[in-house]
Image: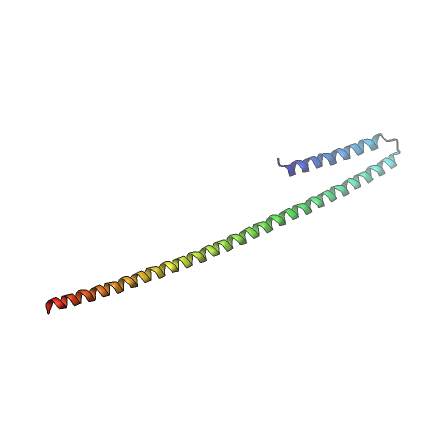
Length: 129
């Protein structure tokens, strides 16, 4: 059981104990039946109002916690998307650099191969003439 559940459980026991104690006090008080019924009714209404108030407070706190968690989750998701998009963009840039590098090296190799071929052709021509 976590602290929140323990606190809620303790609050319920406290409210129940207060209600029982108030009822017992009213029963043993030297009052007439009508006065006692009115007191019991009033105490019961006050207890219900307090319970509604505690319930409303608890509901508001739960909504606040929900919204905080939701906002953090949305922010985390947005941050992850931004980082992923940045990573994809960086990957595309690296891929383009790699393609450019390979193309440059292929062109260099082609130029060198053509130069070697011309030299070989020239030397072959010199030998045959």
